[in-house]
Image (cartoon, rainbow, N blue to C red; front, side):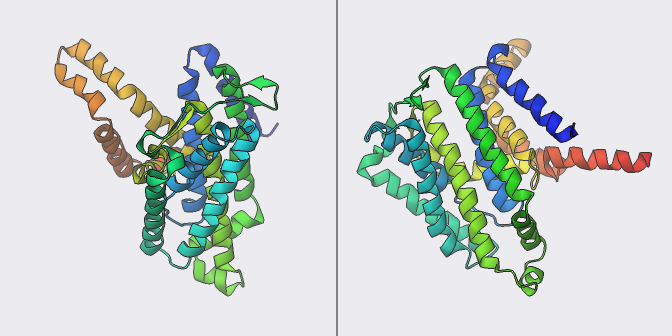
Length: 327
């Protein structure tokens, strides 16, 4: 059997068994949603070389679209998810068509500006609930058969959806389309000289990344039965950049590791501070729970200085050096 396929099967079995190993399902589902979001962003930055500072717009737009379709229109859950993905993809077409006309820092600033416009639209639109967001979104059922009110049932649905999204990213990267995207990242003038329509490929990559980010946002709405402004803020765009860089830019598993690290820090820094306070008797450690962003920032600085390629990138480079030494 192919070693990579075997590793994927083992990973799937481990993830499927997590609820029975004492892992809180909501925590695991949050990691999966953010991992899918980070993989979508990595497709754009790691494989195409386009740095977007506005990817939270797609996560937030899909979250609101799915939440409103389920709560106000009473749509079936699967239709609500598809609707959220379509809204994110359509927004990706509009934003991408404007942003790809520029490159580098100008591209990043355009995406940030457009995402801020989307954020203020959600803040003022009557159907979004403003600062309170959409609350009490019904989870419904899958195909009328599986009751998603159960966290355990929803866990396996989220797992399947995220596996599908990861497969789409993997298939896109390992296709002629993905090879062209990597050529654009490495040497865009050469790709132009070979006759490729660079703007068309950039737009396709942007829309695909937006759609997958929207899928993560739609599923996240089901997990937390709400859609809030935090899904569309510029801080969320910065957080997904952080996940990708910590895990490893341009790797398939790097964003997964990065998402796990960031979500773990967000949820467990306070508990770790409590443990250190009990161990040392110093109440100062109790403040760690109030300084999550500072701790994440320090982790980011350490990773940038010590792991320039990210966790997965450095591990792959180390294994490559070991193989070369043995050869």
